[in-house]
Image 1 (cartoon, rainbow, N blue to C red):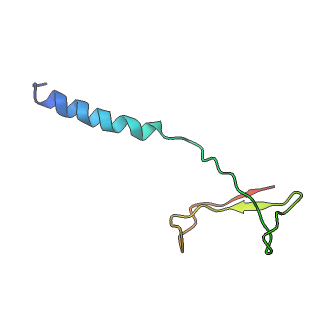
Image 2: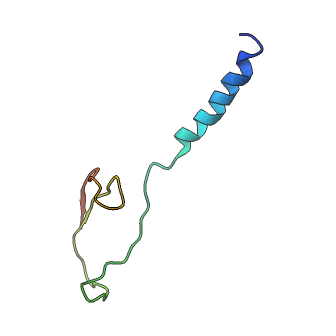
Image 3: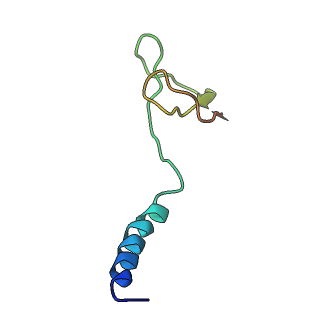
Length: 66
């Protein structure tokens, strides 16, 4: 390896390391309200469907929770 290739290789490795350092789980905490804006009490089922856009996005997956 020549002396000019080493800094380029180090630069590539420096930017590649943070890619694998991201979180593997998404933590989310929200409040569930009824149509009047009052908190819903008791146990309910919830469907979580993350989308690829803020509005009119495509669902990436769907999860159902009790």
